[in-house]
Image 1: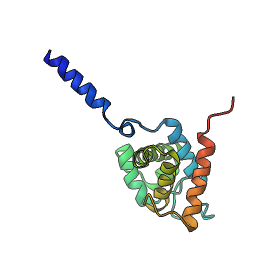
Image 2: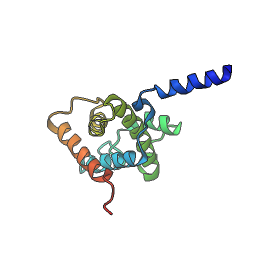
Image 3: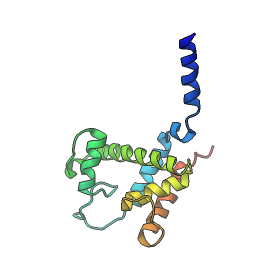
Length: 153
């Protein structure tokens, strides 16, 4: 009887968790965001601009991200020369940030995408309301919306 009561209490406790805490972003949402960030990445026109891969990642950022996602540090050259590894790391970080923003925005997808895009460019989730950063965020949102729509049947 006691174990039955414990089981019921645990079940009720799990049911009462907020929906946003239980819901993780989908693989499709992560893929759409990763592609939107890639497509919107500023084109500097310089091969030696200090940014790496199609996502234009800074070397100091890459160190932490590779430690977080691969449990080892990559050099910029390793990141640059392996599109598969670059995509894996960017997807890992994007999933983490999208999950945070879906919770922060109470599952408002557009607001979550805007927050991640702003964070990607500035390190902050807000404050991208004017100038270059606003234009960048809007590009990311546009590319995301194109990619995240289901294919027409």
